[in-house]
Each structure stands twice: as C-alpha cells, then as structure tokens.
Length: 431
Image 1: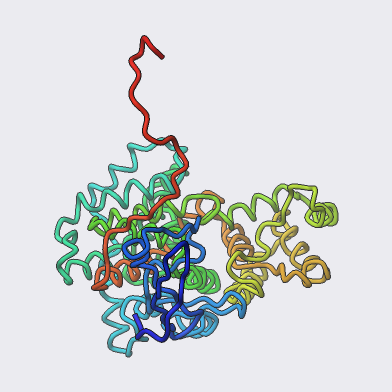
Image 2 (image 1 turned 135 degrees about the vertical axis):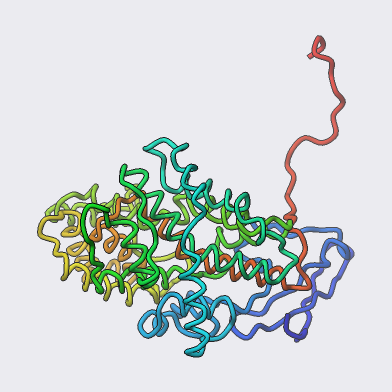
C-alpha cells in the first residue's frame, strides 16, 4: 500500500469518522474502510464489489475509459506483437521481462514439466464420453494435489515455485487430454521439441496414425490467444482464486476453484456465446435482420462479442486478435464455413454502422478469439478450457502475490441481512 495522502470524512447519525485515503500509481484514489466496522459499527453495501478494492497489486492495471491494459506496466498490444506467451508468463510471475538466460532457463523448466503422472490418465476414463471438458478440467486439476505432494506446502517458497511451474506446464496437456477423451481419440503425449503453443496444437490435433505438422501461423495465433488472456486484474475467477487461497488451501485446489468460476457463461463463456450467436444467424443474408434486432430495445437479442463491461472505449486486445483472425482466415479460408462467413460480414457491417460506432460497440477479444478457434477446428466446448489454460499464469501470479502480502487475511465478506429476526422454536404439532 502507498503512503496515506489525505483523509475522507464520513458523517452519519452522531458519528463522524476520518478514513485514510491512498493514491495508487495509476487509477482512482482509494478510501480505506478496513476499520469502518470497528470504529463506526457499520458496513458498506457493494453488490459485486464493483466499487471495492479487496487487495493491492502490482501485476495488472486496466483503464476502461482509455482502453488500456498493462502487465507490470507493459501495454498488452506491445506484448502480443513483440513477445510470446512464456515470456509474458515470466513477466507476470517475477515482475520483469527475462534476460536471454532467464528466458532459456524458464522455458526449459516449463517444457520439462509438461507430462502428467501416468496414473492421472485413469481419471479421464471415469468421466462420461459426453462430459464437458470444463468439468474434466475442474476435477483433474483439483486432483493434482493427490499426485504432487511435494508442492502443496504454501509456507515453503520453493514448493510454491514448483507448483507454479507444474500448473503452467501441465495445463495444456490436461486440456488437450480432455479434448481427446471427448472425441474418442488416443491421448497424445507432449513433445519437448515444440514450443508451448505448437505443443498444445499437436496434442489436440495429431493422431498416432500419421505425421502432423503445426502451421506456424496457427501456432502464432494460438500463442496470442494465450497471451491476450493471461491476466485481467481482479475479475471473478481471479478473485475466486484469491479468496480460496486466503484460507490456506493448496495451490491446485485454488486454481481448480478459479476454473470452476471461469466456467460460468457470464465470465469465461463469452467467445462460446459469440460463436453460438453466429450459428444462430446462420447465413450472411440474415445479418441485417439481426442487426435490426440488436438495435431494438424491446428485443432481448444482443450482439455477443461487441463492446465490453470494463472497456468503455475499445478492447486493446481486440486489435491484435483481429490481425491474427485475418491471418488464420486467409490461411484456412471461409468458403466452406458459413459461420466464419457470417462473422466476417457481421464485423464489417457493425464497424460501418453509426449505431455501433457511436456507442463504441466494437468487436472485442472474444469475438475474434472465437473466430480463430472455430477456424482451427476446436468445438465451442473447448473455448473455455483454452481460456482456463491461458489464465492459469495470471491466477498463479495473483495467488503468489497474495501469499506474500503481510496484510493478507482470510476473506470474509459481510452482508445486508433482510431475513427474520429472533423467533422461538414451535413444536411441530403446534405449527
């Protein structure tokens, strides 16, 4: 926490409190209400915690009005253009971009931890074939604590480090195995000669019967998807990881909790919802009808993948993702895919329509990532697992930061109670 800069006065009833105020390095000033209950015997009421800072952090900063996303001070568009996912992982975990030697050592450690314990493969056969991959992810990641006992002691910095590397390394393997299981194909083991994104694509799309070469354009697009989803400040799943971690839970349980939260359609399912909307539209000739419906306030239909809850101007991740989407579609084509044809025409129509441009309803990262994943051949059920493996490094970085915070305490939100007051028990025969 930065030094106190001023105070805020709060008056209610016959009480007047002076509350400390702090100025962050970026963003609005903060009123410290941590002593409000002790000093004033009152709580604040903030559903969704939209006006409450639950922690201080040095990892990620978002300015929704400017359309700005910074990781450790570096703009996301620069990182997505010039860097790659494992370098961004290092940045999020350790605070600085790595030197060449540090990058080589980090990538070596991640690459050598990509295999999972062979007994873990038996977990998959316990799920139904039609199980959602996210259900499998929650179960398998939570079960990692049963296999890696040497990295569950959160009081040991080295065990925290080992757990961090293990999860970043193994999450693509776990996600790819979930995908292979649901389509009835054999698991494909990771390969140490491939980079992180190429390895994931190989585990998803290669089969033992024939050779498979990962196209570098697709690998680069996959790497950008990972990078652009690596962290996003104190969102619902990150807050879930921090809340679970505040109890002292082991790191695998905390990340499993984050995956479970991300599974919610209001959080991690946005790109899946976008693709489902494109498939509902069906053909290019129906786009004007659906744009008209989106403008009609009395129609419940909304264009998914346009605008953003946090970014009030534009999503800074979308520009880079659009470039990747264009490259992927140029490579794979859209001629035989009506969904992608609709996506291209809908993007063009919305960007040219004053209704959407004036309201700043531009295509966001979910719109473009959904297009890319569809073009690559992933089913929509895999979109959120890919989001989860991308966000793992952000969750871990936030979890480690929380554990090193001397002010950290177990999370315990308050409530505005509106239920019955004290009542006496009535025997059943008298009710």
